[in-house]
Length: 94
Image (cartoon, rainbow, N blue to C red; front, side):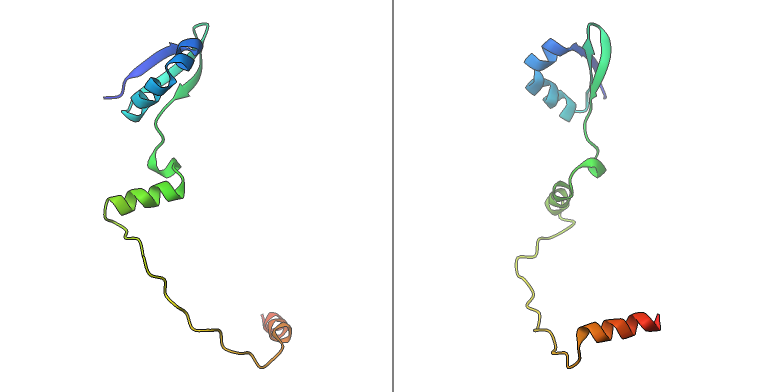
């Protein structure tokens, strides 16, 4: 159930922690200035969260698993020609 609350600026400042808990639980809060709505506190949807938060949530849900071991790649192969020349030849072909 989404609850809609109206609260004045002064009261919102004094109760910010409690208001944020209510928002986490699904409430929407309208902040007013002298009775006029000026802002809305609402919970972020998953797609609005930073990538690292979304990845952590997927790991906790068991959808992703964190790779603990890094793969060791072989060293790059030596190139016998000038790289700049190879790139220019490739650009000229295309």
